[in-house]
Image 1 (cartoon, helix red, strand yellow):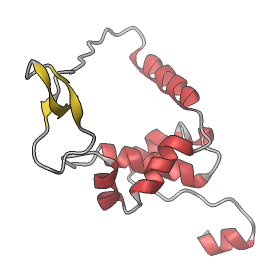
Image 2 (tube, helix red, strand yellow):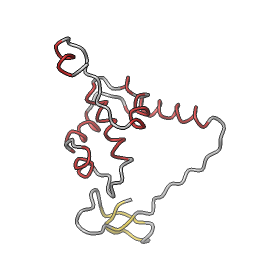
Image 3 (cartoon, one colour):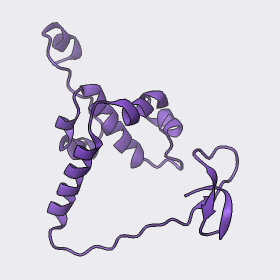
Image 4 (cartoon, helix red, strand yellow):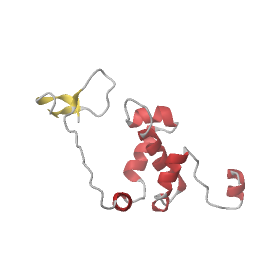
Length: 138
């Protein structure tokens, strides 16, 4: 059924497809989003995260995904979905997949110096690999 027919029949719009892997993973969370647009931005952010972009900032994702970084920012900060519900569901899924297997979690907080003028979200902060406070990101 096309979008025009859905509008004429006052049916909710179905979300646009991305790639099967992202669609399948995100379908587990679809009911947490009250509208189709929020759910589509959720899928697009996942698509952006697994992309081969060097920088995964909202302005860079905008170039690849074809949606404005302002829309993505609004989705992350103001949409009517609950982060706590999403986190709980994600953790429950992870526990059910792992069951009793042991895992090793590696957290890298070393940080990197800012290089050039294009690096987003940098600040003066302690960088472990430099051993002092410098302009960079962790």
